[in-house]
Length: 301
Image (cartoon, rainbow, N blue to C red):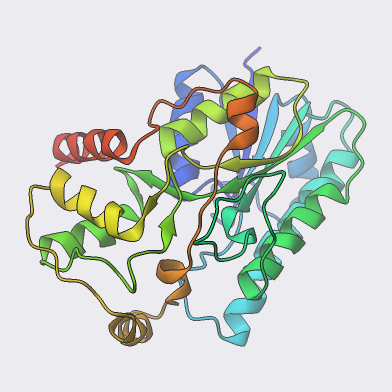
């Protein structure tokens, strides 16, 4: 009988990558989403059936934060995370053979704006504001559940980088058009992780049955925004990169209907627990990550 993994909200950049990887490993991958060919969020019986006998549940569901934070979008951002987590928790309680591991997305944005020191799971200071409220509620909706046969893990993800999607396309375009300089002050820290390491960490956590709770998912060598853009220009062989001052970012954010917080907040996060537990990153530096991403991009195009 085929091993089974359930991907909830598995239709985005990370979900598609994980679907392909687990399929290659010989897993049956069952997806819960709003798309008609997947199990619907309203189909409680279908969700319970999918979860029964699964090796693992990975929940990536949540409306993109790449939008303007008006009341309607704020409500959707919150409910798309907390309500889906609650649906899954209730379904797990109803399972006869629940998966031994439930991995739920969270975000490294839960920590405060930090230019003075890095944030770890043990000494990180939780921030304030809308994005932080979302992250806290999201984690709370996971850890509210007491599941005797299922380990609960929340992944506080930094910005996920990969050739197939995510944030890289707009950054590539900025560099191509000569706008690949520092954004805002350029001093804000940019914590990131390569998508392959996200996948490898999931396998690591599956293997390590003694581990649960909160993990920072970020490469061990975060960089400043200025260094991130500099390394990207170098990798793309572009010398010129005009900076974008904060006033320009504010205007641009309104035009493309997003928020400047996504660029100017300083996220300085270290994967203390993962390193302590012996996880080794494949892409520990931004140079390695960019090298792989650009090679892959060239092979795709």
